[in-house]
Length: 442
Ligand SMILES: NC(=O)c1ccc[n+]([C@@H]2O[C@H](COP(=O)([O-])OP(=O)(O)OC[C@H]3O[C@@H](n4cnc5c(N)ncnc54)[C@H](O)[C@@H]3O)[C@@H](O)[C@H]2O)c1
Ligand SMILES: N[C@@H](CCO)C(=O)O
Ligand code: NA
Image (cartoon, rainbow, N blue to C red):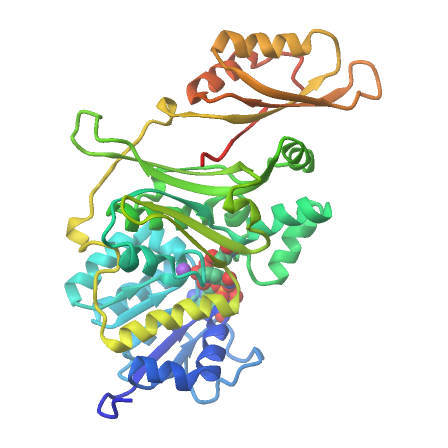
């Protein structure tokens, strides 16, 4: 180790799952981390809401700040780790103060980076400070490093993946054990995967935060979280999971970002970002991704298809990504946080999804009486939707009772399915709104 380098002194904000994971990892792997960083890494001060709670880690050597922004101003802090959470408020204040003071910031906070990544990157560029957020996207998987550095020579065509461990845990528990939604969510919360507000997980918002960051890195774009079309997993029922299985698919929450060819008259390409539960063919690599595991696929024009897979959440994996960022900072790697200097990130137009083609799974709940199937297939015919397969399971117990009808369409324009459903809107044959889930394109 280079003895001339003084220690990198760290202020740690947040002593929850992630913050305590960082303390444990630094303790356990100190010798190898410091050898790789070329200097000592020392936590000097910490901040949390509750000073006295027993977290099973020794905090006695660290100063304590009840206002986490104060960490940025301390003379004995060179870099700050933000592991507190929240897109705005104290976390954003701390981030701004840290970068404003010319100190490096490492954060696990995808909500903050998705909403304010650009302004934070501008701040970092002004002060010459480093900003890193590997832990914010797919936890322990080095996907930001992989894209920003490893795939830097490629033009990226498409990025997609399973970006939320809680949803993947819930869907795969429902699939393999028949657990119901609420029990599987409670387990994910106990295991420390879920966000402080779990609706961010199950409504797809957390995956959208990560997708917007990935798209910015992959496509050299300004982060556009508001441009992500989001639907979560709360509408997916056990019946959908079993119908999908009968049709040869599993259901996964997938975020997909790609670019239209630049033929929109502006000379600029347009970005499409969507997070939706998708039917994934059983032979697709994402079909085998289960539990809290995340996986990201990136398609580069020279490297081809890259698959990054690993633990997307939890104390150890998230700490692993944070400490990798710290090691970069300790070595003096001050490259831009996204793949381009912030001034060169492009404000991309949003692509119109109606022009896309695809295959869909459509689930109807219908009244079990003659003529209902004919009515639905007539709407499909009139809107130009071609049906590939169709399953109706069971028989309603009483006459006129409810049954489930599931179909898979042939490849066709997305707008045709929307037109068919519009034709059926208000029909007394449908007992609830149909659910449309896309089939993931290979
Ligand atoms: N848990 C994971 O698996 C995981 C994975 C990747 C990223 N993240 C992100 O890491 C961050 C932390 O997640 P977590 O799961 O450790 O959360 P947590 O709820 O377990 O811990 C949050 C910690 O921050 C502290 N805190 C919050 N607001 C504070 C404030 N205003 N002042 C001082 N302290 C404050 C709390 O006291 C607590 O110690 C979030 O941004 C989350 O999205 C979590
Ligand atoms: N709540 C997130 C944590 C990791 O970002 C998840 O379930 O994936
Ligand atoms: Na990561």
